[in-house]
Length: 176
Ligand SMILES: [Zn+2]
Figure 1 (tube, rainbow, N blue to C red):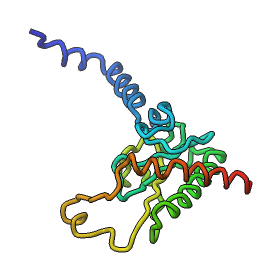
Figure 2: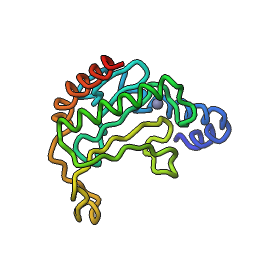
Figure 3: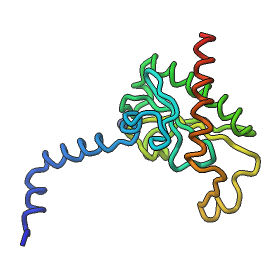
């Protein structure tokens, strides 16, 4: 019988548990992990820049829900460098242009949830949401059941958006 070893070791090695918790959190960060897998329909990464990348949201609010994420594991907005901010904004603009071409949305929500209190799903690694919107896309199904019927699969969205985002980033670079 294992008792009382598990709780005993946890109780008397609190520094070790704190280390494991911190370490485990860092290793399991999806935003650190995704770009290491490269640009693919599996990783959902659409484009990799020098300081940041574009990825499809696995749990989208709408079809084509993209996110721009720095490679660095940064939680505070103030900790972003000027280079990171500059490239992230460029990738947001390229994403908006790609989404316009692909889906002809009526509008966009672009923003960040900083901290768990603000609704961040993964609070440790900040990210900018780019959500295409259509008139009437928030219907009763969404409001009442929290269920969203998405017309396009993630794989299809990736295939559609990957070349378009790439093209738009190149166009941005040519303009300088
Ligand atoms: Zn991370």
